[in-house]
Length: 440
Image (cartoon, rainbow, N blue to C red; front, side, top):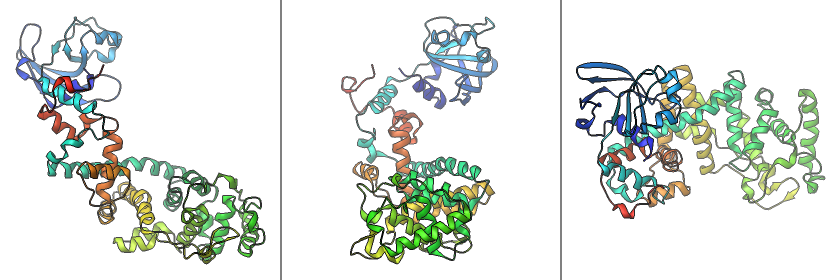
């Protein structure tokens, strides 16, 4: 038996209320189960119960066995002195608080099918424990859960945005620049891009917003890619030498210190995803008079949003992938999939946080609506959901399904999942006891 399962039963009243009795056999009437507490202290705050005509208000503590109250040291902790009811699966002994007062203890009786269903889910060998039952999901329930999950996911990303905002002195342009740069790394080079954005503040780039070549010189130079030992074949490359010359002037002017060029990863990347290409595309995106974030706030439709964040590497890269190495090719433009990932992971969360931070709901609502207009992501997790019978119609849905799998399914938080709640509370026994992978 897991204690969290008893919390679940108590929170939602999924127990036999007629058998909730005190030691004298008097019925205990739950007027309010209390507020669930996941932190230290009693499990439920501000509960109200009625026993033999008397109403009691206080906290509720839950254990598998009554003796666990002492095992956890609660008998010496004044924090538990306001416990008005001790709920257990097995009442194996009397327990007392730090004042020496005996706790009112009651056993929770429930249908075994509820626990059987819970165990069948948490011990299922598949990551998506309920994947065999997706066909029975209530569509309205699933849709409402998806809407809640996508907001939860955006708010989860908000923590990082708020941290960057604090580090930059509430500078939204600088925050957006750092966030955008981070996701330009597309996992493999996330950390180097983040380091670059810290080493080269946006306020410097902004001074050269009308000169893309200077922005490229600032980015390539500060990234460490202009170190003469990094690209030996580039020593006689005219464009490369011009960048070095320009960076020497700008780095002296702004006292810039280059990163180590060897931090950048090229291995196992498609040439079009090389950081040399991505930096040029980022430069093109940043060469916007007035600031990119200011432009974002003015955009009302997805088409213009995509245009704003589509970028093409400078002409030099049409026939290069690294400095000095000539390769026949074409214009290096951010593809639709890469652009959408930037929108999903950086642009939309920042717009959502901005609206929430300033009390401007139109921006937060616009951010969510943009997700509905973007094609669903195509990755192993989304394909896993598709195999289970749930298809993501758009990015809002795919983001919700990623959140569901990563934060609920993988962690076996079935009791916190609306779908899990519906399946467990129904008490349907799909398998016999002998077939379950029971916990030890």
